[in-house]
Length: 157
Image (cartoon, rainbow, N blue to C red; front, side):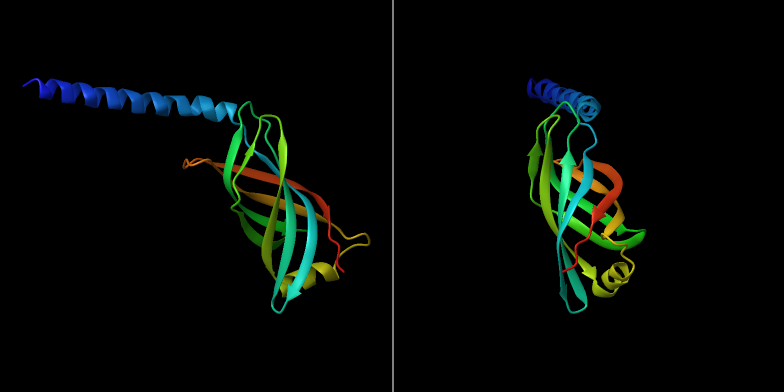
């Protein structure tokens, strides 16, 4: 007879703990600001048949009050309004509060799309870009959206 009340007590304690964790999540999410992901540079372009490989460096800024443990970034990239690539950064990186990090990424691009873009490059090779996607935080299911636009220089050798 004494095990039933203990089991009920244990269940109530587990439910209380789970509720406390769920209620604390919004507070942590408020302290963990949206990462600011931008395209720092296009470091290389390699044409390989019908595919081109772009070497990119992403700049990730953490403006929050807590360390940002990024597990993965999923993103889509546009140059001059043209959908160029989708990519995934799978190297985990922890970014301290109010700090930033650079993450190298390779993405595959359709060569025809890239050649269309290159044919319309202005002198100097600067293009407008839009990068948007989600940042997966730590080992949680939390995904924080990001979006950033700017300009970057494409160097074609």
